[in-house]
Image (cartoon, rainbow, N blue to C red; front, top):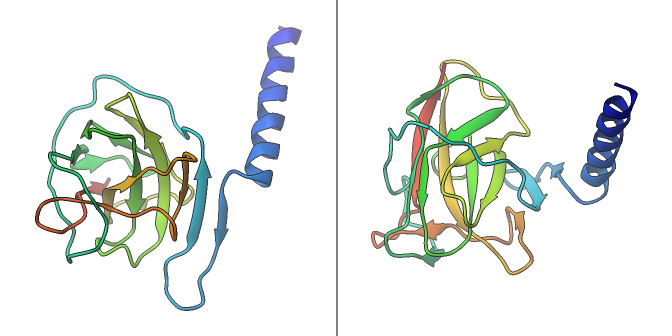
Length: 172
């Protein structure tokens, strides 16, 4: 019992120091309502058995980004409000970041991000909790060679229509 408590304590201390030094950093932007978010590493754990619903491609506006053919994302159309978002499936030939936004045009707050490489489903841990009754948007963003997500560095994955590969859900 003592050993288990010691291990848990060390993991919590490691996570706290890691997040403070180079994990999540949120600063407000002076020119837009989008906050800067930097995430390193995988960020979440894979899950299984998620139901595939609410899949769609494209945000509200055409955007510049990295075009990937056959890229798609699917999340449950209704999810519990809270600190994570379930991803049912991802189709991508390359590693991508799954980013949760408060608005469909990416002008809103970035709620959280997680890197998906070999896995095709999982959870995205959020920096800001979702609120019941609100609609949120989940989009694909191209990974960089350093496996770090930063809102001002990584570019959206866009489909053949020129729109970010994106879907939405409602928090319940």
